[in-house]
Image 1 (tube, rainbow, N blue to C red):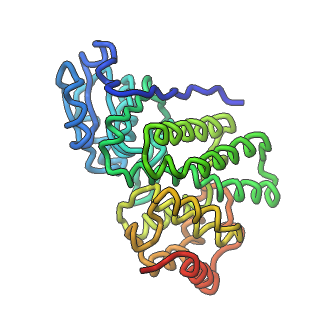
Image 2 (cartoon, rainbow, N blue to C red):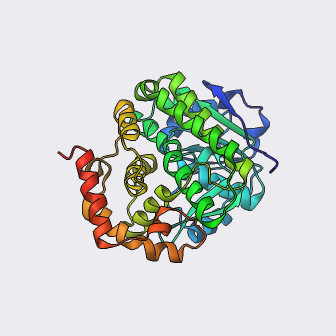
Length: 341
Protein backbone atom coordinates (compact mmCIF):
# COMPACT_ATOMS: atom_id res chain seq x y z
CA UNK A 1 0.00 0.00 0.00
CA UNK A 2 1.38 3.40 -0.98
CA UNK A 3 1.77 6.16 1.56
CA UNK A 4 -0.68 8.90 0.64
CA UNK A 5 0.48 12.53 0.75
CA UNK A 6 -2.65 13.92 -0.83
CA UNK A 7 -3.77 17.44 0.11
CA UNK A 8 -7.27 17.68 1.53
CA UNK A 9 -9.39 20.47 0.02
CA UNK A 10 -10.39 23.39 2.20
CA UNK A 11 -13.84 24.75 1.36
CA UNK A 12 -15.19 28.26 1.83
CA UNK A 13 -15.22 31.79 0.46
CA UNK A 14 -12.45 34.38 0.42
CA UNK A 15 -9.96 31.67 1.33
CA UNK A 16 -6.84 33.22 -0.16
CA UNK A 17 -7.15 36.19 2.19
CA UNK A 18 -7.19 33.82 5.16
CA UNK A 19 -3.69 32.50 4.44
CA UNK A 20 -0.77 33.50 6.62
CA UNK A 21 1.10 36.62 5.50
CA UNK A 22 4.24 34.59 4.80
CA UNK A 23 2.65 33.07 1.67
CA UNK A 24 2.58 36.49 -0.01
CA UNK A 25 6.07 37.74 0.88
CA UNK A 26 7.87 36.07 -2.02
CA UNK A 27 5.38 34.49 -4.38
CA UNK A 28 4.67 34.04 -8.06
CA UNK A 29 1.27 33.46 -9.58
CA UNK A 30 -0.02 31.44 -12.55
CA UNK A 31 -3.52 32.67 -13.16
CA UNK A 32 -6.20 33.17 -15.79
CA UNK A 33 -6.95 36.93 -16.16
CA UNK A 34 -10.63 36.51 -15.24
CA UNK A 35 -9.75 34.67 -12.05
CA UNK A 36 -7.17 37.31 -11.07
CA UNK A 37 -9.76 40.06 -11.27
CA UNK A 38 -11.85 38.18 -8.71
CA UNK A 39 -9.09 37.31 -6.23
CA UNK A 40 -6.57 40.16 -6.49
CA UNK A 41 -8.15 42.08 -3.61
CA UNK A 42 -7.26 39.15 -1.34
CA UNK A 43 -3.53 39.54 -2.03
CA UNK A 44 -1.98 41.93 0.52
CA UNK A 45 1.07 42.27 -1.73
CA UNK A 46 1.48 42.07 -5.49
CA UNK A 47 3.06 38.78 -6.60
CA UNK A 48 6.57 39.12 -7.99
CA UNK A 49 5.22 37.97 -11.33
CA UNK A 50 1.77 37.19 -12.67
CA UNK A 51 1.91 34.61 -15.46
CA UNK A 52 -0.89 33.67 -17.83
CA UNK A 53 -0.07 30.16 -19.14
CA UNK A 54 0.15 30.35 -22.93
CA UNK A 55 1.47 26.88 -23.69
CA UNK A 56 1.69 23.54 -21.94
CA UNK A 57 4.34 22.20 -24.32
CA UNK A 58 6.91 20.84 -21.90
CA UNK A 59 10.09 22.35 -23.33
CA UNK A 60 8.56 25.81 -23.77
CA UNK A 61 6.99 25.75 -20.31
CA UNK A 62 10.21 24.66 -18.61
CA UNK A 63 12.20 27.35 -20.43
CA UNK A 64 9.64 29.95 -19.41
CA UNK A 65 9.79 28.84 -15.77
CA UNK A 66 13.60 28.91 -15.65
CA UNK A 67 13.52 32.57 -16.71
CA UNK A 68 11.15 33.51 -13.88
CA UNK A 69 12.25 34.81 -10.48
CA UNK A 70 12.90 32.21 -7.78
CA UNK A 71 10.13 32.38 -5.22
CA UNK A 72 9.31 30.49 -2.05
CA UNK A 73 5.63 30.13 -2.92
CA UNK A 74 3.72 29.60 -6.14
CA UNK A 75 -0.03 30.01 -6.63
CA UNK A 76 -1.99 28.27 -9.37
CA UNK A 77 -5.38 29.95 -9.72
CA UNK A 78 -7.52 28.90 -12.67
CA UNK A 79 -8.21 25.77 -14.65
CA UNK A 80 -6.02 22.81 -15.48
CA UNK A 81 -3.36 24.80 -17.34
CA UNK A 82 -2.80 27.30 -14.52
CA UNK A 83 -2.69 24.53 -11.92
CA UNK A 84 -0.35 22.29 -13.93
CA UNK A 85 1.97 25.20 -14.77
CA UNK A 86 2.15 26.10 -11.08
CA UNK A 87 2.86 22.46 -10.27
CA UNK A 88 5.72 22.49 -12.77
CA UNK A 89 7.17 25.64 -11.20
CA UNK A 90 6.92 24.04 -7.76
CA UNK A 91 8.56 20.84 -9.03
CA UNK A 92 11.47 22.65 -10.70
CA UNK A 93 12.12 25.25 -7.99
CA UNK A 94 11.02 23.35 -4.87
CA UNK A 95 8.53 26.11 -4.07
CA UNK A 96 5.53 25.55 -1.80
CA UNK A 97 2.42 25.13 -3.91
CA UNK A 98 -1.03 26.66 -3.34
CA UNK A 99 -3.75 25.64 -5.79
CA UNK A 100 -7.09 27.44 -6.13
CA UNK A 101 -9.22 26.03 -8.96
CA UNK A 102 -11.45 28.61 -10.62
CA UNK A 103 -13.27 25.91 -12.62
CA UNK A 104 -13.76 22.18 -12.06
CA UNK A 105 -13.60 20.94 -15.65
CA UNK A 106 -10.68 18.60 -14.88
CA UNK A 107 -9.24 16.87 -11.82
CA UNK A 108 -5.75 18.41 -12.27
CA UNK A 109 -5.80 20.43 -8.99
CA UNK A 110 -6.37 17.21 -7.03
CA UNK A 111 -3.66 15.07 -8.65
CA UNK A 112 0.09 15.05 -8.06
CA UNK A 113 1.04 14.44 -11.71
CA UNK A 114 1.94 17.42 -13.88
CA UNK A 115 0.10 17.32 -17.20
CA UNK A 116 2.05 18.74 -20.15
CA UNK A 117 2.16 18.28 -23.91
CA UNK A 118 5.00 16.92 -26.02
CA UNK A 119 4.28 17.39 -29.70
CA UNK A 120 0.50 17.55 -29.07
CA UNK A 121 0.60 14.39 -26.95
CA UNK A 122 -0.23 14.26 -23.27
CA UNK A 123 2.60 13.47 -20.87
CA UNK A 124 2.61 13.34 -17.08
CA UNK A 125 5.93 14.44 -15.61
CA UNK A 126 7.01 14.97 -12.02
CA UNK A 127 4.91 14.68 -8.91
CA UNK A 128 3.87 17.36 -6.45
CA UNK A 129 0.89 17.84 -4.17
CA UNK A 130 -0.08 21.34 -2.99
CA UNK A 131 0.58 22.59 0.51
CA UNK A 132 -2.92 24.06 0.35
CA UNK A 133 -5.82 23.19 -1.96
CA UNK A 134 -8.43 25.93 -1.61
CA UNK A 135 -11.89 25.42 -3.08
CA UNK A 136 -13.44 28.89 -3.13
CA UNK A 137 -17.12 28.93 -4.02
CA UNK A 138 -17.06 32.64 -4.95
CA UNK A 139 -14.46 31.87 -7.58
CA UNK A 140 -16.18 28.75 -8.90
CA UNK A 141 -19.65 30.29 -9.08
CA UNK A 142 -18.31 33.26 -11.05
CA UNK A 143 -17.12 30.93 -13.81
CA UNK A 144 -19.23 29.77 -16.78
CA UNK A 145 -21.16 26.96 -15.17
CA UNK A 146 -20.81 24.62 -18.16
CA UNK A 147 -17.12 24.39 -17.21
CA UNK A 148 -17.96 23.16 -13.73
CA UNK A 149 -20.53 20.69 -15.03
CA UNK A 150 -17.88 19.34 -17.38
CA UNK A 151 -15.85 18.22 -14.39
CA UNK A 152 -18.07 15.18 -14.10
CA UNK A 153 -16.16 13.62 -17.02
CA UNK A 154 -13.20 12.63 -14.88
CA UNK A 155 -15.54 10.75 -12.51
CA UNK A 156 -17.79 9.34 -15.24
CA UNK A 157 -14.69 7.72 -16.73
CA UNK A 158 -14.82 5.21 -13.87
CA UNK A 159 -17.60 3.52 -15.87
CA UNK A 160 -15.26 2.49 -18.68
CA UNK A 161 -12.04 2.38 -16.64
CA UNK A 162 -13.31 -0.40 -14.35
CA UNK A 163 -14.29 -2.47 -17.39
CA UNK A 164 -10.77 -2.08 -18.81
CA UNK A 165 -9.20 -2.96 -15.49
CA UNK A 166 -11.21 -6.19 -15.20
CA UNK A 167 -10.41 -6.97 -18.85
CA UNK A 168 -6.68 -6.62 -18.18
CA UNK A 169 -6.96 -8.81 -15.10
CA UNK A 170 -8.84 -11.52 -16.98
CA UNK A 171 -6.62 -11.60 -20.06
CA UNK A 172 -3.20 -10.49 -18.81
CA UNK A 173 -3.34 -11.44 -15.15
CA UNK A 174 -2.89 -7.79 -14.20
CA UNK A 175 -3.39 -7.15 -10.45
CA UNK A 176 -7.00 -6.28 -9.63
CA UNK A 177 -8.03 -4.93 -6.23
CA UNK A 178 -11.69 -5.81 -5.70
CA UNK A 179 -12.05 -3.49 -2.71
CA UNK A 180 -10.65 -0.46 -4.52
CA UNK A 181 -12.73 -1.26 -7.60
CA UNK A 182 -15.81 -1.48 -5.38
CA UNK A 183 -15.04 1.88 -3.77
CA UNK A 184 -14.49 3.42 -7.19
CA UNK A 185 -17.89 2.13 -8.27
CA UNK A 186 -19.43 3.75 -5.21
CA UNK A 187 -17.98 7.11 -6.30
CA UNK A 188 -19.60 6.64 -9.70
CA UNK A 189 -22.97 5.92 -8.09
CA UNK A 190 -22.62 9.04 -5.95
CA UNK A 191 -22.02 11.04 -9.13
CA UNK A 192 -25.21 9.68 -10.69
CA UNK A 193 -27.10 10.61 -7.51
CA UNK A 194 -26.09 14.30 -7.61
CA UNK A 195 -27.04 15.13 -11.21
CA UNK A 196 -29.44 17.89 -10.12
CA UNK A 197 -26.90 19.58 -7.82
CA UNK A 198 -24.32 19.45 -10.61
CA UNK A 199 -26.79 20.92 -13.10
CA UNK A 200 -27.58 23.85 -10.79
CA UNK A 201 -23.91 24.19 -9.72
CA UNK A 202 -24.97 24.79 -6.15
CA UNK A 203 -22.39 25.12 -3.41
CA UNK A 204 -23.39 21.64 -2.28
CA UNK A 205 -22.99 20.25 -5.79
CA UNK A 206 -19.57 21.83 -6.29
CA UNK A 207 -18.38 20.48 -2.95
CA UNK A 208 -19.67 17.00 -3.75
CA UNK A 209 -17.87 17.04 -7.09
CA UNK A 210 -14.63 18.05 -5.34
CA UNK A 211 -15.16 15.29 -2.79
CA UNK A 212 -15.46 12.82 -5.66
CA UNK A 213 -12.26 14.14 -7.21
CA UNK A 214 -10.53 13.75 -3.88
CA UNK A 215 -11.91 10.24 -3.53
CA UNK A 216 -10.85 8.99 -6.95
CA UNK A 217 -7.36 10.44 -6.58
CA UNK A 218 -7.11 8.79 -3.17
CA UNK A 219 -8.02 5.40 -4.66
CA UNK A 220 -5.46 5.82 -7.45
CA UNK A 221 -2.85 6.70 -4.83
CA UNK A 222 -3.75 3.64 -2.78
CA UNK A 223 -3.47 1.30 -5.77
CA UNK A 224 -0.41 2.97 -7.25
CA UNK A 225 -1.72 3.93 -10.69
CA UNK A 226 -4.79 5.39 -12.40
CA UNK A 227 -6.65 2.09 -12.97
CA UNK A 228 -9.57 3.02 -10.66
CA UNK A 229 -10.43 6.06 -12.81
CA UNK A 230 -8.72 6.14 -16.21
CA UNK A 231 -8.91 3.81 -19.18
CA UNK A 232 -9.61 3.66 -22.89
CA UNK A 233 -11.95 6.67 -22.78
CA UNK A 234 -8.93 8.86 -21.97
CA UNK A 235 -6.86 7.14 -24.67
CA UNK A 236 -9.49 8.04 -27.26
CA UNK A 237 -9.45 11.66 -26.06
CA UNK A 238 -5.64 11.84 -26.08
CA UNK A 239 -5.51 10.39 -29.59
CA UNK A 240 -8.13 12.80 -30.91
CA UNK A 241 -6.27 15.78 -29.42
CA UNK A 242 -3.01 14.63 -30.99
CA UNK A 243 -4.70 14.38 -34.41
CA UNK A 244 -6.61 17.65 -34.42
CA UNK A 245 -4.23 19.81 -32.37
CA UNK A 246 -7.31 21.55 -31.00
CA UNK A 247 -8.12 22.47 -27.40
CA UNK A 248 -11.30 21.10 -25.88
CA UNK A 249 -13.05 21.38 -22.55
CA UNK A 250 -11.50 18.30 -21.03
CA UNK A 251 -14.51 16.96 -19.15
CA UNK A 252 -16.84 17.34 -22.14
CA UNK A 253 -14.44 15.46 -24.40
CA UNK A 254 -14.09 12.72 -21.79
CA UNK A 255 -17.89 12.47 -21.51
CA UNK A 256 -18.14 11.84 -25.25
CA UNK A 257 -15.20 9.44 -25.06
CA UNK A 258 -16.90 7.45 -22.27
CA UNK A 259 -19.95 7.04 -24.48
CA UNK A 260 -17.87 5.92 -27.49
CA UNK A 261 -15.79 3.54 -25.39
CA UNK A 262 -18.86 2.09 -23.70
CA UNK A 263 -20.28 1.27 -27.13
CA UNK A 264 -17.15 -0.73 -27.98
CA UNK A 265 -17.18 -2.40 -24.56
CA UNK A 266 -20.84 -3.32 -25.19
CA UNK A 267 -21.87 -1.79 -21.87
CA UNK A 268 -25.35 -0.30 -21.23
CA UNK A 269 -25.45 3.31 -22.43
CA UNK A 270 -28.58 4.48 -20.62
CA UNK A 271 -26.89 5.30 -17.28
CA UNK A 272 -24.38 7.56 -19.03
CA UNK A 273 -26.85 9.38 -21.24
CA UNK A 274 -29.41 9.75 -18.46
CA UNK A 275 -26.81 11.31 -16.17
CA UNK A 276 -25.29 13.64 -18.77
CA UNK A 277 -28.74 14.81 -19.83
CA UNK A 278 -29.90 15.38 -16.25
CA UNK A 279 -26.70 17.22 -15.31
CA UNK A 280 -26.72 19.25 -18.56
CA UNK A 281 -23.20 18.26 -19.50
CA UNK A 282 -22.44 18.90 -23.17
CA UNK A 283 -21.27 15.71 -24.87
CA UNK A 284 -22.75 15.87 -28.37
CA UNK A 285 -19.87 16.03 -30.87
CA UNK A 286 -21.12 19.16 -32.62
CA UNK A 287 -21.54 20.96 -29.28
CA UNK A 288 -18.02 20.32 -28.06
CA UNK A 289 -16.20 21.01 -31.31
CA UNK A 290 -15.71 17.46 -32.60
CA UNK A 291 -16.86 16.26 -36.01
CA UNK A 292 -18.01 12.75 -36.86
CA UNK A 293 -15.19 12.38 -39.45
CA UNK A 294 -12.73 13.23 -36.64
CA UNK A 295 -14.29 10.54 -34.47
CA UNK A 296 -13.83 8.00 -37.26
CA UNK A 297 -10.28 9.18 -37.96
CA UNK A 298 -9.41 8.82 -34.26
CA UNK A 299 -10.87 5.33 -33.99
CA UNK A 300 -8.86 4.17 -36.99
CA UNK A 301 -5.70 5.82 -35.65
CA UNK A 302 -5.96 4.21 -32.20
CA UNK A 303 -4.08 0.94 -32.93
CA UNK A 304 -1.00 2.81 -34.14
CA UNK A 305 -1.34 5.40 -31.38
CA UNK A 306 -1.43 2.71 -28.67
CA UNK A 307 1.63 1.02 -30.14
CA UNK A 308 3.51 4.28 -29.88
CA UNK A 309 2.10 5.19 -26.45
CA UNK A 310 3.21 1.93 -24.86
CA UNK A 311 2.94 3.33 -21.33
CA UNK A 312 -0.86 3.28 -21.56
CA UNK A 313 -2.39 0.37 -19.67
CA UNK A 314 -4.30 -2.39 -21.48
CA UNK A 315 -7.87 -1.61 -22.45
CA UNK A 316 -10.63 -2.41 -24.90
CA UNK A 317 -8.90 -0.75 -27.88
CA UNK A 318 -5.79 -2.86 -27.24
CA UNK A 319 -7.92 -5.97 -26.84
CA UNK A 320 -10.20 -5.72 -29.86
CA UNK A 321 -8.14 -3.54 -32.17
CA UNK A 322 -10.03 -1.46 -34.72
CA UNK A 323 -11.17 -1.92 -38.31
CA UNK A 324 -13.07 0.31 -40.72
CA UNK A 325 -16.13 -1.85 -40.13
CA UNK A 326 -15.74 -1.58 -36.35
CA UNK A 327 -15.33 2.19 -36.51
CA UNK A 328 -18.42 2.52 -38.68
CA UNK A 329 -20.46 0.38 -36.31
CA UNK A 330 -19.43 2.57 -33.36
CA UNK A 331 -20.36 5.73 -35.22
CA UNK A 332 -23.71 4.31 -36.34
CA UNK A 333 -24.52 3.37 -32.76
CA UNK A 334 -23.34 6.76 -31.52
CA UNK A 335 -25.65 8.54 -33.96
CA UNK A 336 -28.51 6.30 -32.88
CA UNK A 337 -28.26 7.23 -29.20
CA UNK A 338 -27.61 10.97 -29.38
CA UNK A 339 -29.73 13.73 -30.86
CA UNK A 340 -27.89 15.31 -33.75
CA UNK A 341 -29.49 18.65 -34.68
